[in-house]
Length: 374
Image 1: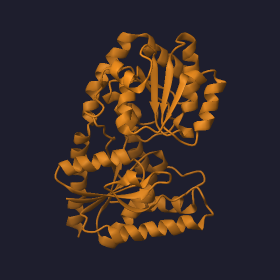
Image 2 (image 1 turned 90 degrees about the vertical axis):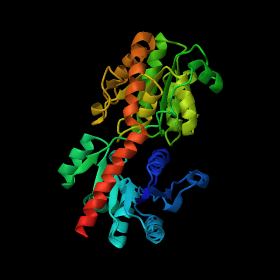
Image 3 (image 1 turned 90 degrees about the horizontal axis):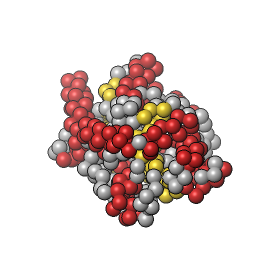
Image 4 (image 1 turned 30 degrees about the vertical axis):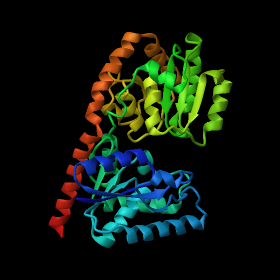
């Protein structure tokens, strides 16, 4: 099977999917939309077909011109594919639908997150107008949760397969905590809480920082390590300062995925406070690292993460609940150890090799249906 994959964000995820499908004997080419601020060296082994459009700028003519160039380059570049696998509605899913019409190649849309389902507050009018077209014209949609599948059925009248993201189980296998801390220059005796993701407003890091500041009352030497970069960096530093936790909150900035493994192995607890998500890969990586987890109970995720088994689920934006669950796992080693053991085992069901087998079945079904209709 010759698969043309189109991606804008989610480099690590798409590389894992590509590599897993290659291991299963498929011919896969990854076409990428250049994301602002990312070095072109990060796109090694990919075919760059355009630049990510600034949909938030309603008035910028260059946005539409750049988008038109992206579509033209995609149409000119993608050749001899049996099926298209596009990650997110814009710009990738729309590009896939265009190729489907021009080249009669079925396009499968993989939802990336909630932004694929709902309107952007300040998006260009074309986003709202074309989203239903992409949803209805894609031959198949792969949702990440049952909530997304039900939303698609109610809002657009389309059916979807449900396939949560995967994780590199072997790559995140934990190393001894002391070795990881020594490698990173982190204190050996302190309780370390880690969180990872883009520093964006919907990620909920302000709630986490304020909750962590209250944890410090009981565990004064605890440290919160934030892995990621983004526009909220300055604001979050102010939040840490105002909460009296500046010296205990460590902003590491962007960290390559291979380095995240060391931070996870070094930590005692992972917290994911996001208020809006599709299916967070980083939580699976924490599971595969054997970390106990506290996470916001975003709609749809409780089908995969069980409260009190492999995580504590707390209401989004609830600082008190975050504080209580962090303290529970940091104080009770037996409780934390039980969650670690279960997470190491549960993560195996999400390995990328398992994911590749499932997505292969979806793509083959789409191709068979397309062939029977031609």
